[in-house]
Image (cartoon, rainbow, N blue to C red; front, side):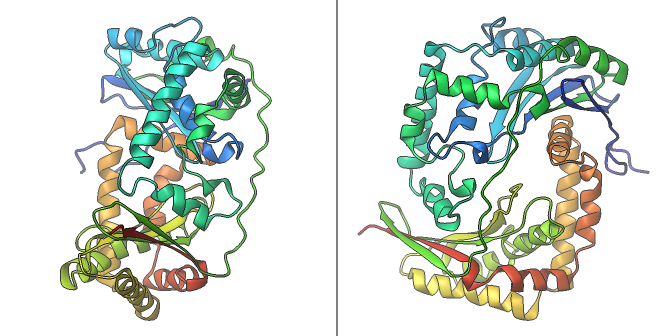
Length: 421
């Protein structure tokens, strides 16, 4: 018998929806004295106006500036032994609080109040706008290779809003954000009928329902616009871009369009990238870094996007190795996979790694809460209990067919990042 919770059992949960449209997922865990309140808003950078990008990420900062009734968000939480944080990506914005279960109502109070009425002021906007602007400069403009995603995304995407990064398309969009702009963004997306609330930990279902009715039910629903994103057309010819900058080494980035998070082939794509570039025993690291010493590092991964995301091959070359030589070696490995497929032991190894990672992550109450929220916003919270089965069903033939279909020259976007002389 397994002695560690969630190693051998599924994550049990109950779902219900409030009259204002708020979807609630309750997950009882009586083995912990803690509780997590996770609020996921169904808005990310893909929902932004192309001329006003970076707003979803800006709001991640603004939401900690206090609400009308709570001037300091952190102080009451710290007084009850809680901690909080948030993150934004292209698809969603997620806020979470972890605290002793006995103090869960403080989390309900804080999260519901800022959902109801965030405190908008010129002073708060000025502060957070400056914070985000400095982040843009430090991480994306003034750091070696920092602007990779500002260049690679618009190379790979021509019309889909994935063509800009979460930080925004350009710095001026954040610098010029007005109070009217951010108020309109909040009113449009930060509403109960555009959110998923997950309550996890040592909180009974009855208590969870009672607190939801008390703190979230009175919040009115909003007229959330239907998402109608411009879909990216199928790429039919290779694209490339060369950048020369003051970086320590040449770098190579190769991006292919993959599948969406809801596609049946998503699990095939995940396993393929693990085989090719996860860790030092992966195909590309072993061949291109250890054996041939063409790269100082190399990785292969995908972005895990809700819509059709990217598969990325990337590495920094060793001194004296040309980008052309490095690129040819990468393509040779890709063609080898397409021609010969992978070995059964390779596939078994990455499946085992995924299973152990999944088990380890699900030991965390917070990770379970976030996983349930992500699954529910995509339509089915029970996906968290089905993923390992999907991975185990992938065959060597599936990997080979996927590689042949997606890892093609016509579907490729290559960024050459050259070191300035």
